[in-house]
Length: 171
Image (cartoon, rainbow, N blue to C red):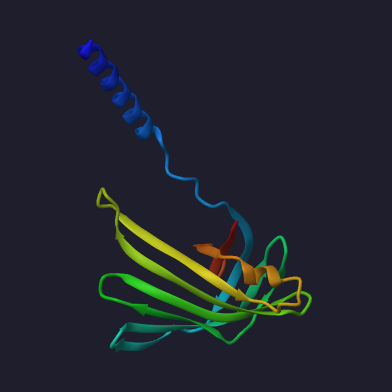
């Protein structure tokens, strides 16, 4: 009788263990395409090695953007401020503004990371992701930009002299 009980208990533990292994990580949030920015850039300049790393500034000179709910131009006068360390990691902070086709100005602060490294097999790996924050007028039809988190990654278009950023809203 005791052997039968132990056998049943052992089988139950195996079943529970198998079910625990079958359990998957929680589903992540969905993403919704928000817009694509085609940003033109000015001449890059370097501030040299600072106490925080190598500082580079890339002027933002203009461009265009378009998405399902907004369209317009990138305004001249912003810049991408990059801080690189010796390990191949660069922190970026781009500060600029856009103007919609109907004349609404929206401020953007886009922070991110560029990192060069290797994957588990030792192959070169390039990582470039950002998280733009939008400041739109609260009384405009673009106020939805103020109340969401966004992620973006670049596209490297050979026919465009600048950077193309694809932006998704985290749902």
